[in-house]
Length: 137
Image (cartoon, rainbow, N blue to C red; front, side, top):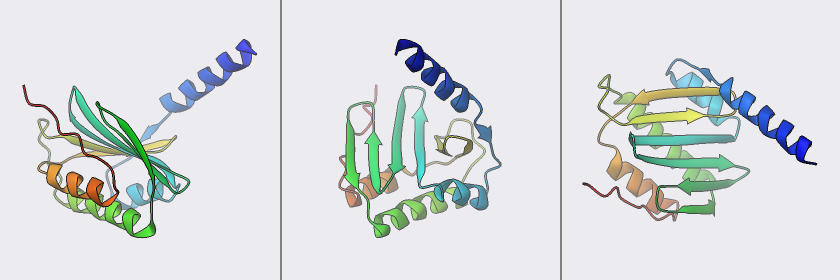
């Protein structure tokens, strides 16, 4: 049984390491969204990342402080898509700006954007998920 677990773990690690970085285009983002099993990471800085995981009609929210899970409606999925599209349209090239990464098991699209913390807060409120703000040093 331990050997199966080890082999399964190595297979998952291998699959994750084979993730292909795609060009940041709406088409590539939508291709990932269509899998209905994907994650969106908001990489605020080296120490603070928020992640929304979508799978089988559920959304999970992972922050440095807690993990939450809720059922997601069609309208909430559309609101999530709107946030990503809005930020994509305002993306920057500044390496100091937070990064947004959308990925599934095989593909990842990432881009930089700034000033989306309020939009993220409003989306989480709509999704009935508690936003845990980053504590400034």
